[in-house]
Length: 318
Image 1 (cartoon, rainbow, N blue to C red):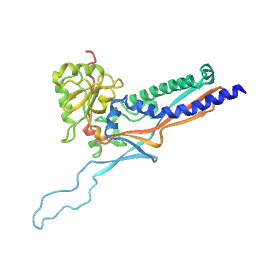
Image 2: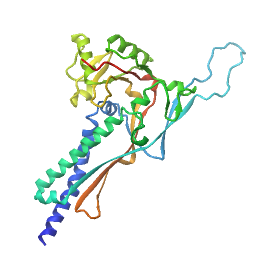
Image 3: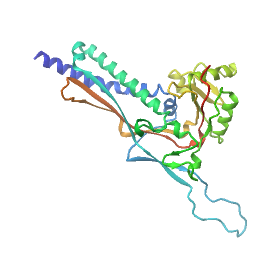
Image 4: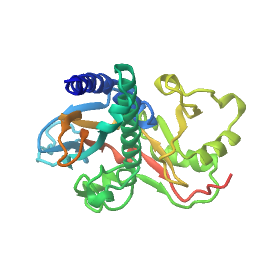
């Protein structure tokens, strides 16, 4: 009878501790990724549903012109917008707790500490999975991961199902500087200018620690900041100001790469039925183990690729 009581006690602790930790887990995951922090600040973390996501974008202007008197006006129909299409990408983290570990951590406080530790491991795993995928081209895991910045901010290929070789797709071409070498302020200024159509301009620059160090050495002393402005600084990111955009380092950014992003036109969308959904405990045949799965269905969308830029092949030695 004592065993039954102990088991039930552990089940009660598990079923209460796991859901309680979920808000902390989600908060920690996103506030550890610089781009996500900016999207939170802009309220560009969205929730949606459906079989796929369609993102309209304008690629041409309506007929316009000046006239006088009885001049003939151009009122012909003209296609000016289309839609990019994105499939939901499904991710998960498995949280496994063998009953033997629960038995060795008897008492509510010990079990709560054990469960919290397992959830923190799941948090780190999810964070790294999402952070790495944000810089991917979508081909990883046999095309199952999100289409990240590598393809969204590019000058060739397709994005959102639209080839960049078409008239519509030409508006999805980003400025890409692949010349490489040692990063210079002139190189950055050129990329910044190419990603600017006033009043739109990059507000977030992401690069590696090595490139961040090089920029730090290049800028004037009065341009340096101990902390990034806004929410980025509040959660602990250091930043450097460049034309009003904040430069931060991200450990998931590929070597030799620098992104200039206008986060106003970037969204991260979660399916309303799979937004960090905790499922379990799930029985495992032939094992005395408690298993929970943390599920997420999401899309990462850059609405205007031409307002983004990247510099590639930079020298990482500094």
